[in-house]
Image (cartoon, rainbow, N blue to C red; front, side, top):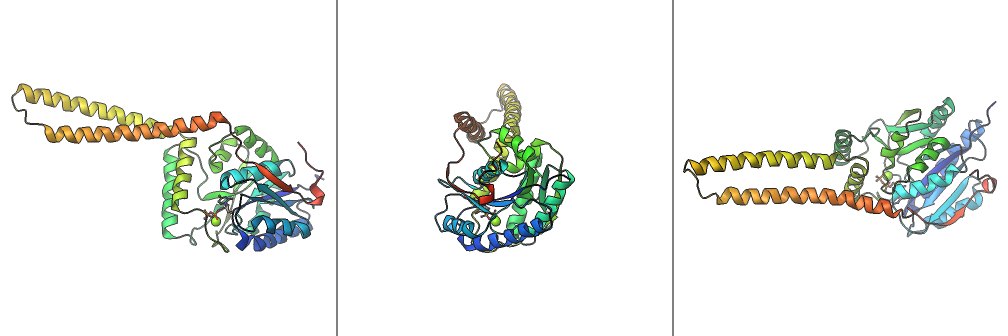
Length: 326
Ligand code: UDP
Ligand code: MG
């Protein structure tokens, strides 16, 4: 019989002292049940990544690690954001586990699905997406903007799994591939489908945040959506080029009209149209420049190859101290 897989659960945490105790308890219960069921190895663990929290998040992680055999902690030196913190955790867990599940700290993603993830993995899938069945718990606003976002991503040619956030399982092989992407502009849910291994989805209902508040206000949501589009698609820049050509065609027609009007003596003082077109073209140019700037900025960050995060401290469970593979 094949040896039971070691499961790692990676949880990025930023100022989550209000929920962390409950999260650890619930994940621990799930993990223990799976171990008891002999689906996963007893060396399975949960890795809490403290993304530079300003509250007692790290102290809580360290305290729990002292008496929960499956709790591990990774403390980042500063706040690097959800995606980079998650990557830090995934890359750390990759060398300790056979498969890794990522989940938010706020218990919005139903932990009971973890068992389904594991079953799919055992069945042979390398990537399993957690997909939300309904968005009833979201506000009308969040639902509408999310729907618009997925549609827009699709139009822009970015492949994403609809209604899937970062609740997913990846095999070590898939994580090794992800590691090779070396992206600085991180939008994990756009990158993972590019890996292309055998994948499937499991469905769940997203719950309300257990406690604490969302770290993603509208401003960060918009920034995140822009990041996703501009780091994975060059279609916006092509649209600008296309618009530029159309503008050019229109201005040729306008010029033709002006010349004919002049020749037939019907020319009027074209001040209005002149001013309007100056503004219009000025606007188009600014938009284009802005977009180009966005891409140039990304190239700039990409070529600098700055590290995405810095690990300050690492706390592993006893059983894992010597099991690093790579
Ligand atoms: N998070 C993080 N770093 C940040 C912001 C958030 O690690 O700078 C974590 C946060 O602790 C949570 C997850 O990312 O576990 C998702 O954040 P949140 O629940 O606030 O986002 P929402 O579900 O509202 O989109
Ligand atoms: Mg949340």
